[in-house]
Amino acid sequence: MTGTVWERLEGFRCTLGEGPTYDRHTDTVWWFDIPGRVLFEHCFTGGVTRQHGLPELSSALARIDSERQLLVTESGLYLRSIADGSLSLHMPLEADQPQTRSNDARVHPSGAFWIGTMGKDEKEGAGSIYWYRKGALRRLFSGITVSNAICFSPDGRLGYFTDTPTRQIMQVALDAGTGLPIGAPMPFGAPFEDGMPDGAVVDAQGNLWVACWGGHGVQVYAPDGVFLRKIALPAALTTCPAFVGPEAERLLVTSALVNIDPESPGADAAGGVFLVDLGVPTGKFEPDVLIG
View 1 (cartoon, rainbow, N blue to C red):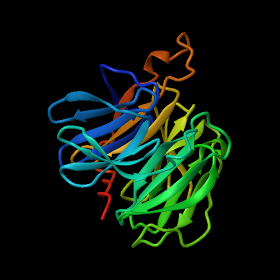
View 2: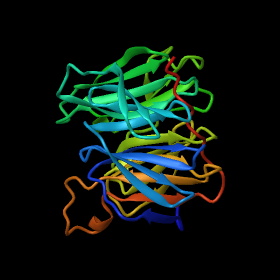
View 3: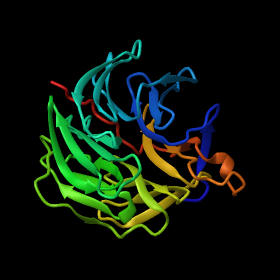
């Protein structure tokens, strides 16, 4: 896409920005700096960004209701009070595996939460992808090195994910009422050549918007896997997108600065959070997670 209008949220840089989630009820977007153990909160209405320290590595959250969020950390799922940030354990997740941590996650239209894990040192095959809904937790896929690109078709009948080093996004048929797989994963589109697939989100038309680790931007794919366009951004290590704004007319994209040569072109942009003006209502909002 040429002529894309974007701006950068100023005042901070993330070592590894991840997990942006937009709350349309409060016009607020949340995201993480995983190694920094920080949760960022930015209210567009007031233009204020707040930082919340976290006790351990955390990477994703979902809205439960107006008072609570479900926070995904290296040891479990925690209930988080929006008012004061207090945490209480809801359910352990790989708490007995100190070598792993959470990574990508996304809420299915049914209210189910898919959660990916990975080795802290990116050990091959150390990660998994889990399904959570109403207090039940199941492991869906194992042997994953870096879980990413978890997202779902608007009708909930298809799920997507990737093991980033494979450069291949996978697609799997789902039960729309539960978010559980009803078939085997199959390749979606061709393997990435421009960077590797990281976080992803699906718009209202079923197109996939995939952040490219090492690819300087977000690539957009039609529901049949055909490449549509690329949104170029100055940060090389773009990590995850989220639709934001009252009509989901903008795209927020996180990035990382790990292993970036400070003298390389564009290094100053590494770790930034970018807002892309899409011009028209394009995206869709993530549903609340069901915990009981």
